[in-house]
Image (cartoon, helix red, strand yellow):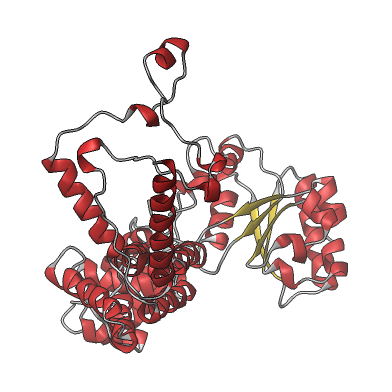
Length: 437
């Protein structure tokens, strides 16, 4: 699906004088990209359009996601007159003049969609001026705003409208738009370069088209080049295949820099990956792995910081979320290091593989029925909270592994205190055992 039309251009489009984003607007709903949550099959706005039961609506979303395009499509599909109205250039006088024309059209049996771009820029008095015309049905109001309508649109107008939130376009959606626009600008281009433009555009189709158009002006021989894209974006283009060797080389360099507590190197490799367009959530997952594998209980907050960074990336997106990744990488670098839990799990796994799967000792089994109790389930179990210092001396490992120690904490960070606590636990258990004897 595409936000903009790829069908043969009309005569005015063929001139190429208008901006590419304007020339590429779709004429069919099927060619509209994204917003499946409101325009997919059986979704609310889709049903309103198909059943021709449109009411006044507010389209709320970031720039370049297709608010104006969608309004024009709705007018075409519902056979309404479309009147664009700028909140920046118009006042009460202009509103009344347009409303009078809409009322005349209604008397002639023709409906009018009044599209107000940046409706949040209208003050309360200007917004109030629309109310009687909306209530009488003289117009169908479609407002577009990048601001939260709960704060920027008066409650009376909101109560008479449905608010639809539009989302920023994904990188694959933008790549598809750019791919379909290539014949219009007379270019060929590899998907890797289109992906770079899509990432740079941050969900904004207009920005993506502007960048492609600027790149086309600098491209030679009808082929889009890294240099042309770099000049258009005014920054260096870093390309690597996400499934190729360089992808793994860079993440390895980042991981080893964090493990080595080299903050500057970690930030360098992280930025290389970000600038090359690496999936931010992939980086976040790897940082979480580093916090578990290389820091662990030496600083348990490392995991908290990494998970928080992952949530921030998911919530904020690009570019704001990148700073959360950098912050997490810095924290992991300066945190005390320990792979004690990692080594402990490896030692346990080795024993599990090399020894027989012994049955759970009877003292650790729950006697959930009378017969199980008679059979000895739970016999010899010592409830910790009923023991002095909550330290039972019973064995919890299978008989053949009693006394086996897997976890050897380091003397770094919190693990130093954990090690001291483990020694205290062993002394208390030994003391309890001698008392019982």
